[in-house]
Length: 526
Ligand code: ADP
Ligand code: ZN
Image (cartoon, rainbow, N blue to C red; front, side, top):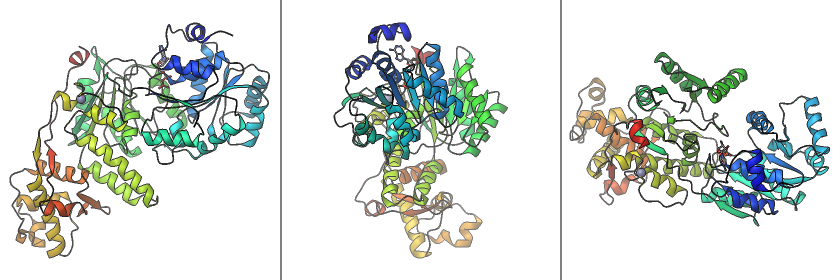
């Protein structure tokens, strides 16, 4: 049997292991269980592929990415590795051939979809061969409270009892303490050694700017920063809905960006074609829902743009992590505004989960909003979420262009008391941001006249800010959970956090919205 260094060199063509790979590989070859937390692009695959080729028998790789199995296996075969997969996309005769090869000991790796592994037939079949190890990829999918739960993963804990002597390695790029603890327990990896890599991606510049006209801002961003040496760069744009994905792709195409839409509602052939072009060609910008990108290995993605707010920091980190896997300067850019906060809060309110589930979703969102509204280093905030402490990074918008913070208590009180008075004196508070701001600015329009809102004591008392200043205040108050949307129409109501602000017991610190000047790619490289 070759050793791990020969395999690394002769099969994969690499001269040395990266980061924790060497330790992980040795540990698994020695028969130990492992839990591996490593950021996207960190090189998780080799952690089980190398031991699979060193240890006797065939490795079982559990992966939820059925659409990518053929690609992953194809890539291994190109390297001369004896790999195959079993999933629902295969014809019976293809499956039979894979099974024959496995039983004949002709395979080193077999990729299996999680739902197959919960079937008794599959387990009995695998028990007839020799397993070298079991790798559980995207292991965070077992976490019920995470952002990516797959029920089929729950049964994977049983593998510990079925194959007590086969080393198991669970891998994920999600690294909150909660997910870590949960996957360790659920996959019965209590005796495993844990390998936690740094989650910092120093070559990614983080930028979050206030959203005004998302499409225009996106286009400007792509034109200035989505360019490398004068050529359009490869990028991914994430949006929440299929509809906006289509619209944005269309808008970009109309403006000479080679953009392609990607979402689960598109024909499978179209999706495969898009994926293929994205992987093989340069300068393609894929506009996608989050359905796109998990497990895709494209090293030279130069930017990831978000035009809608992700639901959690985990999601944001994973999506932005698809940029710059090759280590070269890359940008994670996001436009974020009042409507985003309102939408996400509303979606949680209206979701069908139970109260506990909603509370978790709400916590995930709060952390995401704190990242958006922070006046300190974004990377500090981001990594802090993963329990990793760093110095201010010097490579994010808030480091490069520190936003000013200001005491927004008085404007906050004015806004809150407007909502309060509308509720008390007019017996309803069914108004959205636009109308509240009109009242504060003393705008004289038909709606104000009809409702008699010019009689409110807060009418016209907010002229120290302009409309966009007020929108920023409203956005931050929603982000802070002091006011919250109600129902479908952007109506704002006070939460229990509003009373102490109104009574003057808490100060409300806000950040000034700044639009950082785009850094040229040259500057980013130096
Ligand atoms: P992950 O699954 O953690 O996102 P991958 O396993 O896909 O990461 O690896 C990311 C990229 O890094 C791949 O292109 C892979 O070939 C490359 N890579 C991994 N390990 C090494 C290494 N030791 N030396 C050089 N390149 C590596
Ligand atoms: Zn920073």
